[in-house]
Image (cartoon, rainbow, N blue to C red; front, side):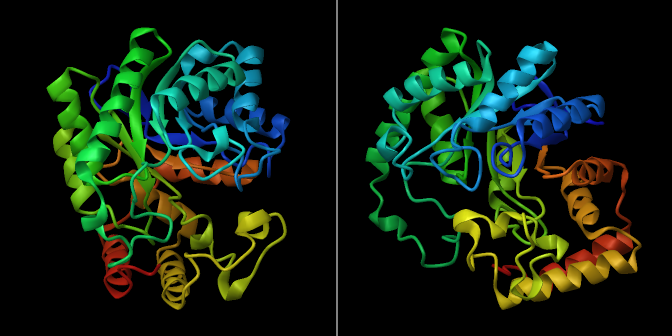
Length: 350
């Protein structure tokens, strides 16, 4: 297992991060504990969760994922071996503080609830799950989807500064060690760091965004910012929410799969003709080179120089073992060339 510094902190994280969002929906507490046991035995020291989880989001499962991690800490006594990341949710879910946007008050109350569920005194990396301002993710990343001229940048900067002061307080009292962003933009990262430098407040440590063979929108602009500003890039959905496996081809909905559950049981932004064609081509590349397509997709992420740690998720132990084992695969130049050809053919499949 390789380890890298998390931003400019003194924390070193494994280049594989254990994602947890299925725990409490697709996975039981015992299964969650089994996954954590296996991951730490393989050298994974970085877990990522959120107050919103489990996913798909439902009121009756909200908070269960953090609870399962908390009971594992209590049972194993291994809290000090884990770099723990969690998130405060933003606007949109009425059962979480009435769906209010992120604010100093939201951070204070959400953080205390998360600490209680997680059975810990501190969170190593506390992330803003999504910005208060419009952001180009979750199907809103195509040209013309967001009119940035209609966003009041000065007002957003004032809100960001208020949030920074709240995060600074949380650091000073020892409830968090660092903070990060999620579903954010180059402007968001740079503005937070500008405000931090001007007001002597903590700088951005990381940004967690969707990234995969199928979704490379953060190259090259956010990738450039992260490298030159020492901000760790933490990709989620490296398997394009499981679609790279081919299990959803032709509109299929396998029993128990994420897209077969709750609100995800619908045609979503990842289901396009181009996406289906791209998946088939990536599967052909993997077959040509004697690889499992999911391992090929993960190995591609693991080998990107601008990525600090790739967030994986699994609903079975077999999936988890396969995902972690991809760390030992080195993609050949021929394989990378074939991957590039598919990307050039389908640069924005969804």
